Length: 417
Ligand SMILES: Cc1cc2nc3c(=O)[nH]c(=O)nc-3n(C[C@H](O)[C@H](O)[C@H](O)COP(=O)(O)OP(=O)(O)OC[C@H]3O[C@@H](n4cnc5c(N)ncnc54)[C@H](O)[C@@H]3O)c2cc1C
Image 1 (tube, rainbow, N blue to C red):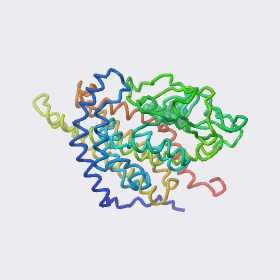
Image 2 (cartoon, rainbow, N blue to C red):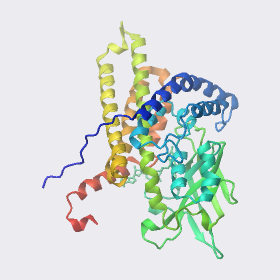
Image 3 (tube, rainbow, N blue to C red):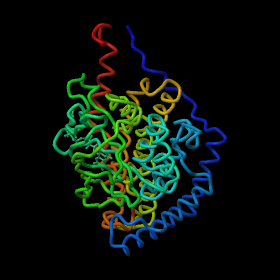
Image 4 (cartoon, rainbow, N blue to C red):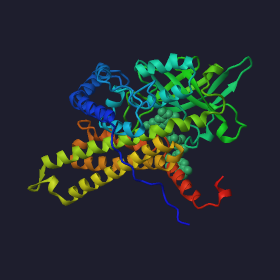
């Protein structure tokens, strides 16, 4: 029997609205975001605190909001722009060109985007009033705490943190998490925590997610974790939870729903990560070309060397392939749902950061010593993209998903499970 893969042909013609937003965003990037990058660096240097919240960011947020470039990620028009994945993906790519400033300026930064989607889908009206509204307004920030230092967390059935039911109702939370991104943001106020509610349940029903205020008794941010030596402004926190009281009403969607919520949260997030990675790749290629044209060695511009031309050509080919695959994943999610797009979502999470890393690495090479400094964003892109091959699931786990899907095509029906 011949097994055909899904039809890969789709016309990614942007709607008028998506085109208008794209033009507005491009203008915002040129007129405000890129010029703000050195201002941001100077304000951070002057503050001497890696978690300082600089004034320039609030100025950019006001401008983005006035321009209608706010909450573009949210697919539900009650909460955000109401764009499809295919419509939003190119906007995420543009924001990825300045990953420290543009996504947060437009209230489209991870992990707040995923958390806002979870609260709008699974939060109670009280959660939505207390946490979702201010998150959508950009006045507070949030973190997502799943990974634990003691266990291999790419397999979430290993997680040990416990949400234990107590007499009289409610739970107490105990455990240690790390790499909770955003928890050291000056405006972070709330965490979504994944922990075991029933260790005896079937593996995918053991975990639940709870909303935990950052200032709840027993929550302690132990330290910030550097990424390749960078102390990111939003931070990646190690956090301990000691007898933290969690009211039953703060469980999202009920006991045992942690995995199901995780699946809903991560699909769109992977499109966003991949498109931002493609944005970084595009900016790195632009920087590579400009530098290669402007410097001469041994009597000829660097851009005239055959190996450099090959790098440029390969970069263009790789970016185009990666973008098409990501848009296919977005289109499948829009038209057939997250489950139907499983292979493509896993594939882009492997492909886009790896592809972008290769281009950034070559751009650093062409920039020589300047490439490893902070005078150009290449070193920061490299650190960010390298970490992305682990964050939100390591490459190997996504490859495992793809291989499982492929093998299932050839299994007898009873083996498919
Ligand atoms: C910058 C950054 C930000 C992050 N932000 C967050 C966050 O906001 N919230 C959060 O909860 N977590 C966050 N994480 C954590 C991230 O999601 C985990 O690190 C990731 O899921 C892997 O878990 P682990 O570190 O425990 O690695 P492990 O599970 O110990 O895996 C280690 C390695 O084992 C190998 N491996 C694992 N499984 C397989 C397999 N099936 N086949 C072959 N090899 C395999 C892979 O090489 C993998 O990298 C972040 C991480 C980073 C680096």
